[in-house]
Length: 363
Ligand SMILES: [Fe+2]
Ligand SMILES: [Fe+2]
Image 1: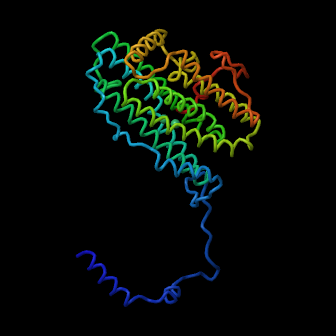
Image 2: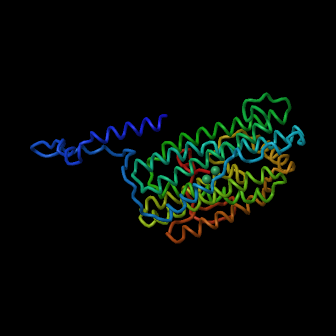
């Protein structure tokens, strides 16, 4: 009924419609001409336009629309958690909580960066790519959420620990969360201060590292559900890496020397920050009690034995070396120096201490 009523109405209305010429006669132009609208104070989120400078980014965005995955479609109910011991469950939950300390910042960190890209009137595909990463990171966070709820309901922080191992896990998670909060404060202050090239170098360290990590874990895990999760996240992270590299190839040539040095420092910051999930953290930036690392190792050993897919510490170090070698090769082309990473016997420039404000990297 609605449709036919609408049709009748439009036929009636058409009969009475004035011609376009008649409508145009209704325009009003003051004697002195039209008034210019005042300029919009900048920065402002409205570019009101869709400039395209980098077609490759537009292509990646198109791919992101169809390549992404739906965490609800993963057959979580096929993971038989009752087959694991309570110790294995808490230890595996600990690893997901460790991951979520990084991945839970992803949505807000990239949403923040996306707003910044709008304010800076970056070309259309840059804005859209940031949006796609925000969406992907929300999915990654959801995977952490689902895995944690399956393994330890009300985890990572809302459960009541019953055993020594559970108490140690919860305490470590509280400390990780404390440091995650410090990271956000630093990131929030830095994101508007630096050009995109600097921000993206920091992001790139995380994307190189995470794409390698998830592909490695997909191969190492003994559980098909986790394999599917790691594979899906790994595919997203590889795409994020392509976004970073494409953007940097565009931005790096115009980078000033001052920022070039800052980029070098950011790479070291990336190593310090991301080693917590990728390897073992150097005691810079991280504020942790001295027993933290000891308990962390115990929990990861148990989770590893349960077949979660955590690589050995040596394999993780090799992973980092491969990831760093890739980044280093990219940087050489733009004459950006690489920082020393003595922890992995990698030589380079000494960039000094790493503080809260230096940690811009994302995962
Ligand atoms: Fe992610
Ligand atoms: Fe990512």
